[in-house]
Amino acid sequence: MLNPPQSKNKMVKLVQVVKNADQYHLREIVINSAHIMTMVADPKAAGLHASGLLPEGLHDAQQFSRVTFTNGKQITVIGTPELIGQKAKNVLHG
Image 1 (cartoon, helix red, strand yellow):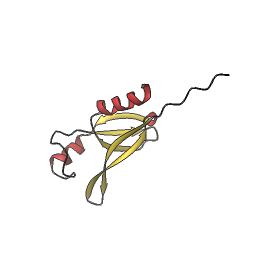
Image 2 (cartoon, one colour):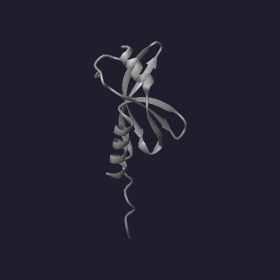
Image 3 (cartoon, helix red, strand yellow):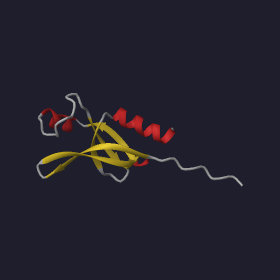
């Protein structure tokens, strides 16, 4: 009898930009990459960073992406769409 193939772990760790009241903070999240529908650059978050509204410690050239999930929810994360796509690809395709 053949063993069924093991399902690959599709979880990817990202850093999300979160707004609480009038302050922004960062938090690590783990998402299922199979539920990502689109990823695009997020110029709004880049503008917040340029204005000094995001937490200190980020590189001046830091880039951000808006990730849309299959359920329609959107989040902003640190990194370019290409970087996030590469993380997801590495998880999905080893």
